[in-house]
Length: 384
Image 1: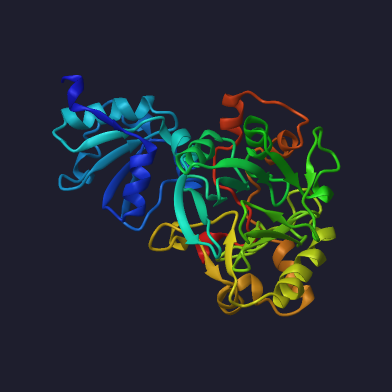
Image 2: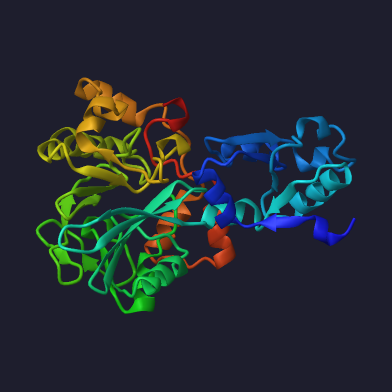
């Protein structure tokens, strides 16, 4: 077999196929536990798990399950095992076969920019969808300036995007101290000469300088009327702070998602923060306009993605449809957000320490720490 018969597909091309609802067959050769924990999903994605060690003697046992009329992508953790299996499939007579370059690690890191809207007075709001991790980050661009909210650690994506749009990043912000992924906000601000903003109540143990993201201040991006207004909204963390952009968009961080609400236990203080969470969701947010478009910091399932790959919902609709906003009674709410929660994110304690600047893992260690889904929500999104 010549090497030309096998080709790799990068995460960007696979993401476009998933978002464009292109039928594709995924053969995932990781072990069953890793597969069940976290996998590639999409409306037109068909997936089969066949562990690599079960295929060392040949792929004959699965050949009849591999389609001939559909594109097949073999996936493993880092890439090596998938190359071996893909080669075996080609030798077995399958033709339209490739492997995911960089494996699930590369899938976890890919960001897909999606335009949300043109803003009043000029400027544009973009959402960056991290399909493999469920993270959502944002960029506001106006008059040659940009602000980035809830950036992930792969900061070159934001730098390149701003440059392509003739903008300089002036501000980076985190809505809270993240526990599921390593923030790129501080690093991005250092690289671009911008200011890094963090809610002060989440920053009592950080080891670096930051600007205080707190209610009463208003950041202006560019020279237009695109105001970013912080709103204190604790519950997921004690410092969680939402942002209203252009009087139209509510960046809710990890307080409110499309299908669920934020969990209060990732700092070990669920009992302390449950009242804050309920007050934010059932009182503070209730005072906001129903017409605000909620843009969260995470999603749990590809079913939450819209027709262009965006994750967004009208606040008034969420009060009708989101189960986390329809829990009757304080005691029932307390039980819901403190009992029977999904597993906590992988290495979340180390991720929090990294985001505080208290430890400095290598890039490879950071990649390992982030493996797996985000798990920031109260409800297991698979059931929604």
